[in-house]
Amino acid sequence: MITPVSEFQVRATEEKASKSFVLVHSVRPLGNDIIFGILLCRKRFTNMVTLGKCLTCSRLQLAVMFVVTVYLNTDVTVALQITSTGSQTIQRAQGETVVLGCTYTPAPSDTGDLDIEWMSVHPDMTQKDQLVLSYTGGQKLHYGDPSFSKRMDFTGDPALGDASVSFSAVKASDTATYQCKVKKAPGVDMRKVTLVVMVPPSVPKCWVEGGEEKGADVSLRCKSSVGSTPLNYVWTRESGGAIPPTATQNSQTGELMIRNHSESYMGNYLCVVSNPVGKEQCKYTLHAYNPPNKAGVIAAAVIGALLLLLLLLLLIWLLVCCCHKRRYEKEVAHEIREDAPAPESRPASRNSSFRSVLGFRSPPGAVYSSVRKGQPKRTESDNRSFYTNSSIGMPAPSKQKAPHLPPVLKYDSSNGYPV
Image (cartoon, rainbow, N blue to C red; front, side):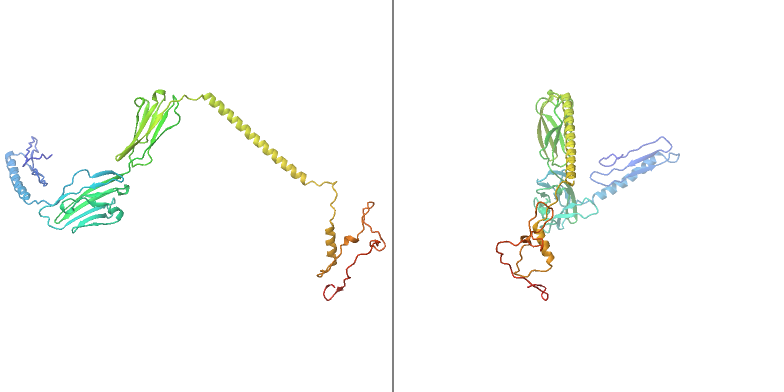
């Protein structure tokens, strides 16, 4: 173990064994980062070498190392350095404005042009970082998507040692690691700041699962629909005393389980949900009701099931009756009645049959008399029809004057119709 001192510390350890040695440590001077290591002078104690000689050898080596250290200290120079302090991880709520600090102090030997860059560091080290804002040649330049880069701007004059930027209206998508790089040749330095943009929790909803019966277990629930994780839920009792001793709560799910509920547990309960950027709350009034008569509930359930079964059987019976009725109607409709008289032929059908026998088309203007005018009437004594004048098969001449008849038509074979 190296013990720091103002100059050097020498520790001599003598072992009384055969392999005794002296271990000499050189210690870095104050303000220097150079470690010279460990000098080891090891001697076996024999008749020719003594412990004093070993110590003399060690002191000589220490003197040489002291001279080298003083020489190196005179050659050290101070370069540009970023002086911003504070946490390098910043958590902010969505919509707020955050300041990313980056103040710097140049060295007298830094005489080159000032160049400042703000970049969004890609999570994948193999990918290229995205340049967002820069200050070079006395001008500010924005890069990338304007809706993103325009919300970032320097808080002061970057040339006066303050390269800090303000980031307005931050969103959850702005969560990233940002790097500030200040270069003024030959000096250069950089600083990284991680920004975590979180969404505050929304107003939660409080409710109870199940009933609020005495002697039963009651579960009070609290849930926020919006909010960045982790969300922490805490139940407290506003009235009626402290949280029941039989109650247990889960800060991650927002459940408050009360065992063996009773009237002494009634009252107003408050649920508070929070995350690092905000909190909200809701209330619920817990009651205690007498449990229902379980025997009555069981009897009502049985009666209801029986009634439902009877109703189902009634519907099935009605359906069967309806099917039998339709089948009977179809069978009756297809039966042939032997005592039913045959239907009589209509006169119109006989006229059409007579005209079809003629076998030709009537010319325009031809008038035909109905065959029915010359037919005799049927008698009731016989099923057959007969004419009054049976010798010639024509109706008997009437005493009345014969009506005017149309001229007789003759068949013209050249035209194919009567003329």
